[in-house]
Length: 156
Figure 1 (cartoon, helix red, strand yellow):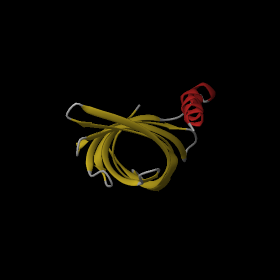
Figure 2 (cartoon, rainbow, N blue to C red):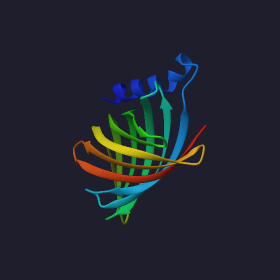
Figure 3 (tube, helix red, strand yellow):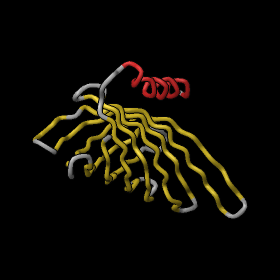
Figure 4 (cartoon, rainbow, N blue to C red):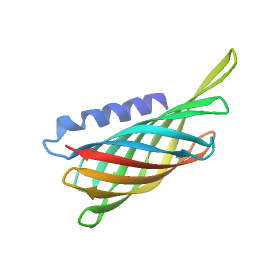
């Protein structure tokens, strides 16, 4: 599974070598992870492969709750449906790598788990390059969880 994730990340990073055009954006987001009941902050990059298909890798840091801290990496694909000018919806699917660290007193333990994501989101344009984003994602792994994230992105 680690090799599959590495191949997906490298493929995503090399897409720019095969495409002369494609919109890019960076999104800063904050949200909540249900099963672990903790808040997170993250950064997501987006690269449009076609007008409707985009690659969206992200990193999210989850603040400690019950001595458990998280750092998740996701590589998702979005299929964008433009609803009207400045507003779009998208389903998503992808892979997840979930890292958790438990720290109690002098004891510390960590684990890494791999899973699959499904979800949906929407974007609303603000100005020429900015947009607001909301996303719901469910991750299937050893400990399944749902995430709701709100964010602000900039296109360049």
